[in-house]
Structure formats: structure tokens, C-alpha cells
Length: 301
Image (cartoon, rainbow, N blue to C red; front, top):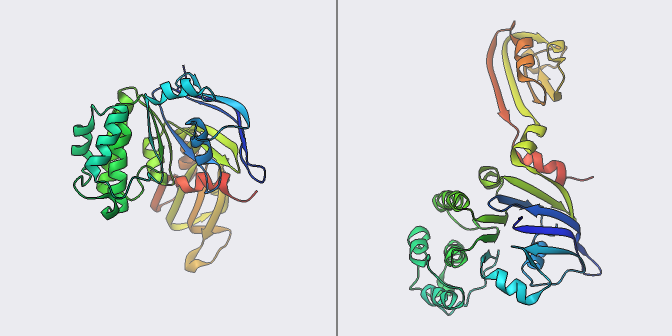
């Protein structure tokens, strides 16, 4: 059974169609990245799945429970952890008081373990917290009752690089233990490092949903060549060469080049075979930046 199921889910505010006929599933035990530019509809989807707002069309199920059935959704929430992009803790309360409240409501069997891992400053009032410390406290409240499904909205916002790495390792371990993670993020390196699949939303509609590796493969490799001698352009007459930029000696662009960059979606072995007769000073073949992948979906039509 899928942990999250959306079937034509729609939220229409009248002047804004925030979610438009969304249909997809999040499999149990996967880390699913939900991505899109600001205003694309990510937070609306999350708030609808958690019952904070009601859909105007379609349906959805979370851990097998219909989100429009209030009593069923309350039961499901006992097994869900949620971290908002703005946790909204009582600023007059200390971290300890916040955790005591959450423990009283939903349990806290993992509280001590998570305090040791994320180290929020518990004795200080929240009003004195930095953004990063608020996030540390939020991570403890999200996981302290040992949920089966975790919904995270920009989970590493404000965390320093060390804590981001610690959180990534923790999330991988949670996945190994069968926890399902649904999170939105603008940190594309984080998405690439953690996600099994990615759903991309734009203007309320699902643009694509694919394994992260498939997105990278389809976008191709970034290739850079620096040669000791001029190479004729027809050496790159190979299927899969795109966006070719070349420079000859002294920076002049001719029918030959000593330096070039391009995106390549073809067979690397074929490309290397065509270049084998030339003396190269440098050849780099790298995965295209993930930012380039998502710009294909975020960019202007």
C-alpha cells in the first residue's frame, strides 16, 4: 500500500488554482522530493494532505486513511511527523516546555536520542533562538514519537553544513527502518543526495514525477574538452551533442577548436572513440547540475 495517494486532488481558491488535478503516489519506505518554485502549490498540497485545508476536488489518502474523514485522519496523524517551514512555537516557552507539550500530545519515546543528535538549546526561551535552533527543535518534535510517515517543508532551513550532513545521515537511517519521507526543499544538492523519486509541480500542476537518476540521465552529461591541437568540428558530429560552444586558438571560433563545452546525451564510448586520435590536454565528463534539470520545468514556456 502506498503511504500517500492523490487522485485528481484540486484546491481552487477562486482567484488562484493552487493544486490542479494532482494524481500520484508516494510509496511506503521511499524518500520523495516535492519541488517547485515559490507559489507553485507545494505547501497547499501538504496542508491539504494533513487536513489543515479542504480540497475542492479529487481525493487523497494518507497511510490508508481518507483525508476528508476527520476521525480517520486524526488516527493517521498519530503515525505522522510534520515539520512546517515556519514551526510557529510559543516564543515565551523554553525548548523543554515545547517538548513536554508535544510528548503529552503524541508521545516522546525518541526524545532523548534526538536531543543528543540535534542539540537544541532547551533551557532558553524560543524567542532567543536563531533560525537554526528553531529548526533543530522542530526536528526533535517531528521525529520524537517515532512516526511511520514524515512530512517536511524545507527541513534544513537555517542549519549549518555539519547539521545538514547529520540530518541527511539520520534520514537515510530512517528510510532503512521503513519510514516514508515526503519533503519539499530548495536545496537541490540535498534533493540529489537523499531522494529516490522527485515530483515537480509548476503553477499547481504536476510537471513530472521520476526517479532522480532518470532525470539526470535524460538531461545528459556536461562535457569540457581542451586539446593540444585543433580538432575539426565534424569530430563532434555524434548523436547526442547539444549546446556546443567552441573556441579555436587565440579564442577565435572557426571550423576547428582547441576548447569546447557541450551537453551530451549519447553513448560516451562513441564520443571517446571519435576523440581517440587527437591529443587532449583535458577532458571532463560530469553530470549536468541539478539546477539545469529543474530549470527545464521551471523556466518560461
